[in-house]
Length: 307
Image (cartoon, rainbow, N blue to C red; front, top):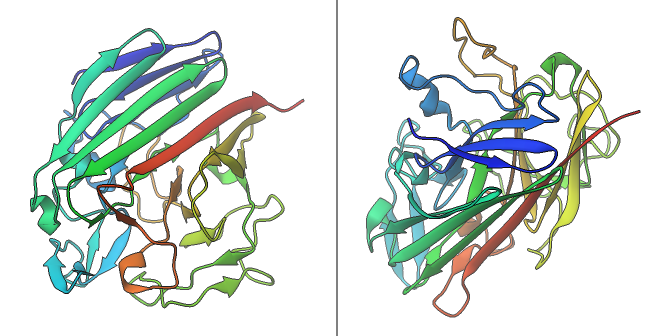
């Protein structure tokens, strides 16, 4: 497996072209802050999307169906035919991205999706640029298309700031999306007050959380602070993003992999993105990308030490 190494004055990071994955992040030469396993020894680990760019439509789409301009498109389903999760079994996380630029602190990767790839319209050119500056890792994602098409890309690292049982999460979200038994949004936008989804002040995660917290009602042009994750050793991760949603997954169904620190609840996925299944909910922020309205996401991971 080829890794692209990035360095700044305070951090190092490693990225793999397979899925444009973030494989390693270290702050002040400390331990890896994302869960990682050797794919040669544990090939099934990639089934959990660790560190990958997922999409072109992240999260779940009901029945894998997209209705656009009077045409119904069928994405491949991968959850008992009920949903297409992260665009099915051959999404961006399973593509080998081309490295188009590499410097000491930055790398840029590109993936081209042909018209019809993944069941969706449009020749899509997607780029991901990782850049380190001091204690900040910035991920900039862009996508262009020659036909109207849904684009909702997310980044899927599992963060582990020391002992995951000591994680405290704060999210600037007053609402969340309730889900049905298949983890699909019901269409309601609910107040977090009095629920386990109220992370407006730092607290541990609910055991089974896998929900979108609504950090905004629309996409922003510049990143804004959406979340802070604190760890036992005082390391903190601050996330700034342009995206209106943050999918929070507590890792309840992660595998236990012998010889690694990977196990259920060993890490937390914090995925800035558009609201899931937006193609079936007109009141949700639109995820339709057009030839004149390209897709852009900027997410910044900022690290510091308490005390």
